[in-house]
Length: 260
Image (cartoon, rainbow, N blue to C red; front, side):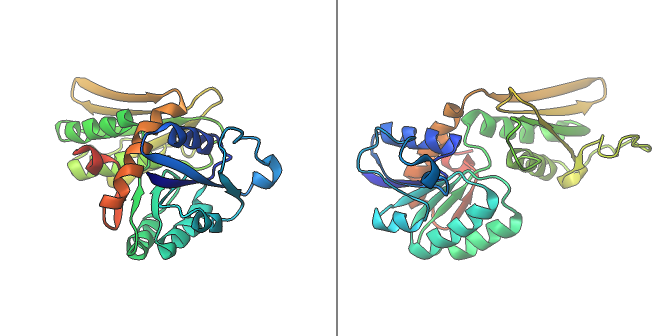
C-alpha cells in the first residue's frame, strides 16, 4: 500500500485527487496540506478518518508519506519540490507555470527520490499532443489555441507550451507570419517555440480545452481535445503515483508512462 499525501488539498483539483486516491486500490491517503485548512477546517474531508491535515508540508514526514501529489500554484510548488526532494519523498506534479529553470532545478534536486511533472494528466490531451507532433511535418503552418476556466491564473497553459515545443521539434519549416500591422497589440497571440503562435482564452463555463490548427495549401487539420470534468485527470494522476518510484530522477510528461 503506497502512502500518499496531497499538496493543495483544499482546492478543487486537490479535493478530486484526495477522493481518487482514497478509492484507488493499492493507495492510502494519509496526509493533506493546504494553507487554507485553517479556514476550512476538516470540512472538505469528512469521510477520511485518520487523515493528517496541516498548513505545513512537514505533516508529510509525520504521516510517512511515500508519494506527494502537488496541485498548487507555481510559487508554492517550487518550495514544495525542494522540500520533497530533500526529504526523499517522491513527487507527482500537476501544477502549471513551472519554468525550464524550475525543471532543471528539480532534475538536480531529485537524487534521493523521483519526480514526475506533467502539464496535463488527461490521457486524451497526451494523445492529442502526440497526434499534432506526428502531423506537423506534413503542414506549412500551425497555431495553438488553449481555452480554460476563468480562475486559471497563468497563460498560456503548460499543455499549450509543450504542444508548441513538440510541434516545433517535429518540423523546422514553417511559413512566415504574414501579419505586418497588428491593429490590436497581442491579436496574433504569443510567439511560442519555433515562432508558433499560441492563443489563450479564459471564460466562465469552460474547464480545459485545446485546439491545434495545422494548415497547408488547400487544406487544414484541427486536432481538438476537451476536458469537461476534473475526473478526466485522475487516471493519469493515479498512473503517475504508482509509477514514480520506478522512474529515476525527473520525468516530464505522461508519455514515457504510456509508451509514447
